Image 1: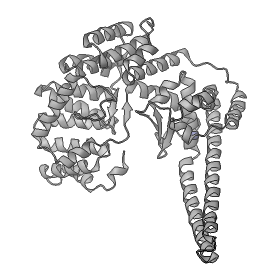
Image 2: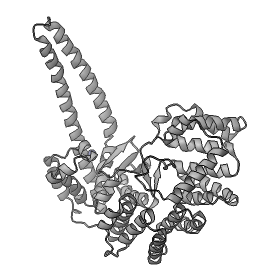
Image 3: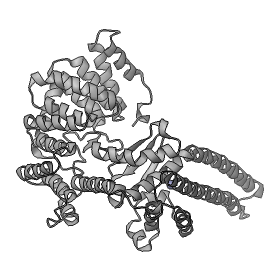
Image 4: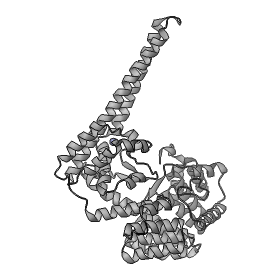
Length: 479
Ligand SMILES: [Zn+2]
């Protein structure tokens, strides 16, 4: 599991993910060496490069599971051709929402709080209901309409004030009332519109679940939980509740509808439940404090998920040797599981042993059928060895991975390092610019691309790519 944007050496948010000192030193060394090689950017550009966009969690195992959850539902909704992505946000609260008509965002808190696949699939089905209904664009036009109404109301209110005459007649209050009245009405209209959309998304979600032979019980269980008074106070901060008002009658309507399904009592496939448990264990191990991990997964629990969570927590917070030993027992239990080799390699790499990380990461790449994010980790290990002989291989692996995984700034960042090692500073600048671009950092992207242009011959493919970045407007819209 890695973070996007990648934490930099002087990441002020490092509390979110405790970095090992060895890794930090290596990362800093690599960064400094690279920065010296290509001449440091201005302080302003460096500061920009540290600005954080929405911080996503990237993980092949979890993303694969979420894709498997979403695929049948999206197909039932007629959206299978839209290339809808499910992205994980680095946030412990419960939330899920859709954006730009092609992405479903889920907080890792929602992953942790969904104890069954069916509960999470229910949330995805509801969000797919919003996507299928085009609710986002409809809400926008509704808002635009409300704004117009608001302006009209204001003009009427001002008119009333003016018509009311003198400042001593008390008409000022009447004027304000005339403004406040319609505004309140418009606000209520919007709320009822939003509520109607929620009910539509519920109904569409249940329809998609029925069409795929799945129960809507998990969706009901999740939403029911949010109406629970005792949870309300403690979960008051959950953004999902703010965007998803859960009046009791809405949840009751959902329950009634869901229970009519012949699949209401259908249980999750045990194999899927097992993957779900592994996903939650991994998330806990990476994201939660050791105390929390060991409370969820006490030593007495010898299940695979519990051992997975503890092994991850040990690699991040404990003794590296113990972590490696724990990961070895995972591999012995499932010698064909690519993610155990990925974990082994990542732990070695971040523990400052990139040479040792290469073999397990090669194995992980092979067993995962060349998952691009794992290839990027292998590329990172190759670059981190400081062995110039590995730079060529790193470049070809990273370039191939970036063809299939086009939105991973970390891939470009590693590519930049690899080019730096070969002394190809034009390519290094271009790759750094692409990384900055994908992080949503337009200033740094433009500065680096401009410098790359001066290093490429005019009109070459690299020059053209750099020129594209220099001349792209509104880079900040991209995230
Ligand atoms: Zn909703």
